[in-house]
Length: 302
Image (cartoon, rainbow, N blue to C red; front, top):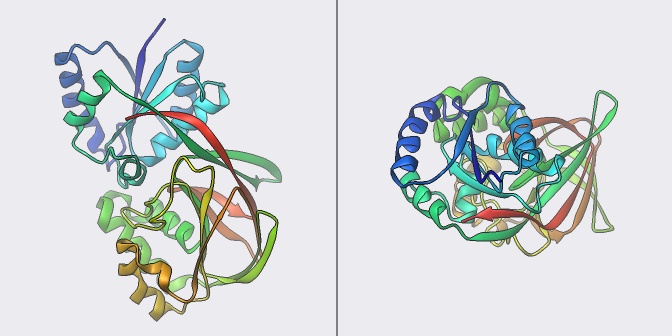
């Protein structure tokens, strides 16, 4: 039986992962770790490689890249039925690294490589979002967070216009250009059966604590509690939103009178007009959408 497969996205981190992988591979070999690896060649390829790894009998699949690479791999594990048996390792070399922060792996890769020699498995929750694409219902797994509104528009801007700038600069540029053009919208929410209708800036289903390149969006989120921390940012004007951004990095935004946090297993979201939709920092399309937690559905190597 095969043991560990590394799936490497050389384009992650504005192309820096290709250089880092050379050093990581040398280190793994020096540690005596048996492994095989494959490179992704295009968006979506990591999902295919992860699915194949499950079918080939690998017990561990390690993501080398960013949150988007990790998201694709989890979707591959899930689609192949290996999410309960095959453990996921993460060496974060991408732009954001928010999920790595949440699970305690936001550290230099030599330390992560050492941990992979004798890893511990930790069962964590994942989320699933259902939305429409081209008239067809689509499902997508996410590990960290998913949302619609201002946050997803930042993802759209960042990924299409500023990715090459690196982590903090790309998110800041995406944020400020979105601030200029974005308009808050009326949405209808159903949160564990409770209807909510209001004008919002953004709604984020948080499984992990961090999002947006280091923002502490959900300080109390727990990957093992079977619940989303649903962050609803209401009808903030642009000045108030700009003034509040530093608070999100510190995790002190929850005291704002127009910010609400609810915990829930299931959420549906229907906007009055179309809203951009993202999961784990990857643009999916547009809401309406529904979100559901899958408790203890993934093994993470920590």
